[in-house]
Image (cartoon, rainbow, N blue to C red; front, side, top):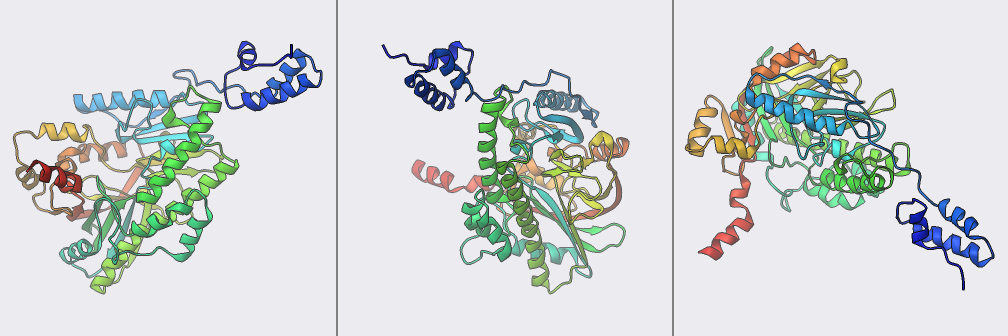
Length: 464
């Protein structure tokens, strides 16, 4: 009877089943057909086996910096959840260091990097910059322009809500950038989305904020949004690449912490795609600022920007992932200034800060105020009051607008952490130096656009 090496023979030899079984068995049985022994065939097959999987770090083996303190029981519960999630994340085999900012809050199942989290790794983790790649801040100064006039102009030119700009109102990114998209296979199918979503701000906590600079009285526009559909699509592809690596190299690693190895063809391709998405996102901010300036025939005297959902490679060769954390180290990007922006809520100043490259912050500062409650929990706490009552109480003294025409109470000031407490902790932990402020005049956000979403209207029509 013809001798055949089977998959069960490999399993009996202690091997984990995988795609490599097919070529391994083909080579082994070819050797048997040529007169080789069973032992030789098994040795040939085992030569196809992938390297041993990488074990998790022992729990607590890689500590992390905790730059946050509780002032209320609810804040303590929030910190406990964040710390538990970071402890699980720090077991990821390629992670080397971590930190939590004062604005930290959970952002998914335990083990997911929290908002306000930093993770330093040997590799790139798409899940650690999140789907909103390069969510970021930008400021432009408009000397001689009244805040009310600028807010109206921004409202006229910006776009909030789902999807991109309608046909006839679309904008085109720089041609060289679109060529860069077309040349990268991870971005080549997103060039249409890169046009449709250019000059849009999305929903959630993204905003266009107008105020006056405390030191000069000049009017400024501050915008907050990320990379929209192009970034979300890249994230999905990155997670797929990382998941294949996880299954092969470290199946014990949590799926959200899967990684793409650096200095590989796929690592280089993803890194280049991230840089192109970064350029698109910066342009996405500035085109809105420029359209407002053009509408007013106004001059912009100064501007800068910074991202807080991104990954940076430092001189030590490691990758520094900031999820809702702002770089505060010198030269964090080729276009970096020494200043960055930290918003708190629509009724509070936007802080203009200078980074301190604090060791306990791994070179990062907070990105905002963060939350102690989920959106649902916050809305539940407001039960018994109408949206109009809540809006009036919390936006007194500012011109707060929702682009959809529907108030989203989960974006009002009470939904966020206490701004004064966050400022105190920034100072206490030496994470940044506040050098100026943009005092609030008004703010535009998407609002509860889902209240009038097409699928809701269709459902209501059917019920009627």
